Length: 97
Image (tube, rainbow, N blue to C red; front, side, top):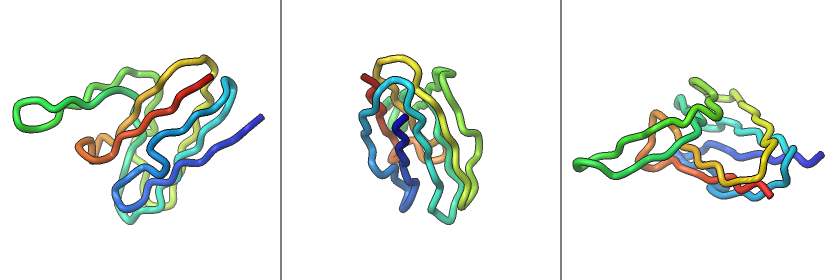
């Protein structure tokens, strides 16, 4: 089974987009000095700001510095995610084939 890591560093997900096969576990690791999250859902520009809307598929909760979160993508599809602390700049996509 394939495994992939996304780092959270400099208030960004690296890489922002990743393609994996169904059944793959993806791990996000916070290498920043501040709290982040990995929350599935969308962020939209609204009223001069941003509005984040979680979809409940996965959520790391608060990831402190050095902490990590893993999620296994069982089904094909496109999964968008963001950091609930920095939704204007931290967003990403996992494409599952």
